[in-house]
Image (cartoon, rainbow, N blue to C red; front, side):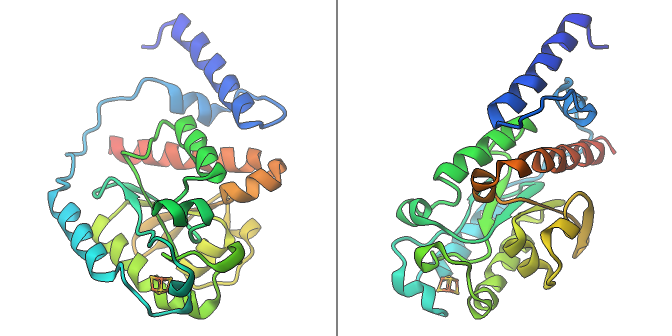
Length: 238
Ligand code: SF4
């Protein structure tokens, strides 16, 4: 049973997180409060990460010199993905930008810093989850990846999903969601609910780079990720 003092702390923390994310009007959202309550011990046995770690390393070595599409021409670094190889939750973006291409890691620029704050708000960090993109090489001038580039690269992401075997996938942005699901549905009609992706629960929300340009979508994103965390916690407790 949570004592009164920690509940006050949790309320303050919820408000502080919203302030830090720049959510505008601050609210005591029920899912956000639940997210920060002390967790029940999980009844799920932790998955052994040895086999997926090796499989991912081998797979990365196999594909990191890929020249299947024109995006390899401007590549500085191949951006395979980072995180826990046996993660239960995987985040999927669209493709590397300038900072990611320089570092060889997804979501390391300003959008990455915002993603870290979003993850922290739902008590995740990069060591627990896995992050990858639809395309592994940077599209020039940060344009959207083109359909032929995505269809060449998508099998790589699908193989990563098969190895990691996450229970939940969160697509960051319209491009990632449409490419993975093979649909043309607008983001506004996909977000705010779970969809099925090959037996996994898939959630779509805004890309952090879009949130930097359109902060009015931060509230929706906040609600989406709180829903993801709630579903994850319920699954953990099963
Ligand atoms: S984007 Fe994907 S398919 Fe295209 S060259 Fe890079 S790794 Fe290969």
